[in-house]
Amino acid sequence: MKAIGIKENIEGVTALEIPEPEIEMATQVKVEIIEAALDGTDRAMIKNKLIDPPPGEDKFVLGH
Image 1 (cartoon, rainbow, N blue to C red):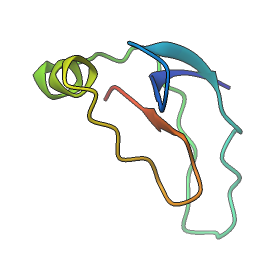
Image 2: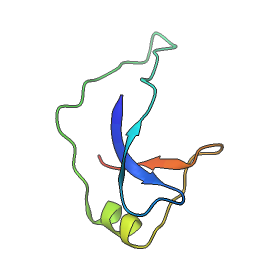
Image 3: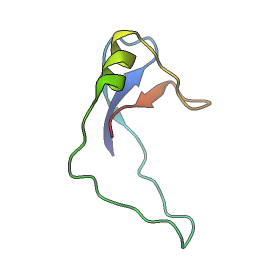
Image 4: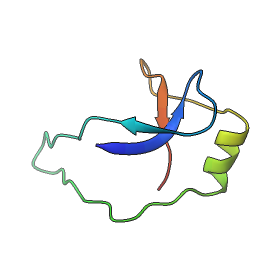
């Protein structure tokens, strides 16, 4: 699935290919996102090269 984010050692934003989440429990749901946006926090992260990826990752997905 496609996403936009920031990666370590790459300037600015980049297109990311990330795995589609799997439903693992009956209490989980999966939703389709029609639109998403970047806000001031995302802009500050890009401008100041603030990346805090999950453990073992080199990328951080932006937007909400």
